[in-house]
Image (cartoon, rainbow, N blue to C red; front, side, top):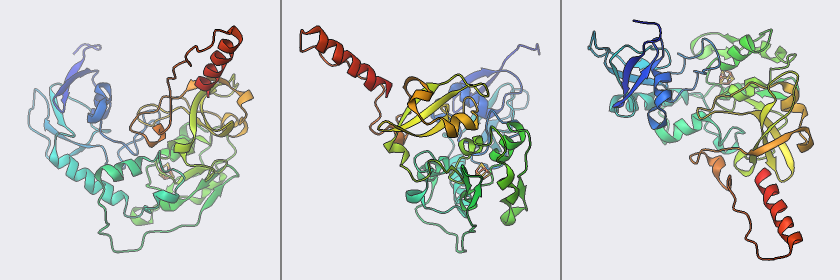
Length: 336
Ligand code: SF4
């Protein structure tokens, strides 16, 4: 096969051509929409991530054109590469949906169901999965694991109760900062993020662990409990930063910037990792060049009361001064 030759894979009846070596998950992302499996641990920007949470399981109903036998078990789509002629089922397979329910139930065995008081509510991938696939009750009879909250410096807090051991923060510390001093210790129900995480603060990029954490285990202490995300107004902005790309989302309440995060793509992954100075120290509008309202998927609760396109006020007065005032008011409302 020539280097640039593509291979064909069909996912939920939709064909797509991809380069050899592409995973099923990334092939599905090339198609987009509802057929893309969810992912709690895979993160396209973090090398080696994936294969931990099992939420992206899919059914391979045809292995390839050469060997059309189906795969005997469901496979993790983030770790399985496509073969030419492969046929995959995700939302069209009752087995997959049933298995995903089981995975969500497992993830929630130790995760507290305290979304109403969790800072991550409204942008938590586990919350979304729970609503889509979870049971209304738990079959688990034992006490959930509980931990004391740990302050990682003065800006980040770890609440291990909510950690689902996805390893994303470990990969961030490993690959984005220059000295990882935390990791996952223990195995099985004794596994936890090591206490050395407290020492992971002396680095310009340590704040990115907040953005990659899919649940409310790692949160921004400068924003914690200041507001619910759906009451805030996300706006894209940038600054000329010597350390990072400086491209961020500002989360406004009124005229106040309550928090600064990296911009996230449609899969909830950050587009560019940002430095701690942009994240924690630049909370004035004057620090930024405002680009406009952030696009929010209509399925997100953050979309509530979020307007991205506004019509200019109708011209009801011939007075050019008032027309100019109207125009400025419209431009201000689009900016914020
Ligand atoms: Fe994943 Fe968050 Fe736990 Fe780190 S703290 S392993 S990012 S769930």
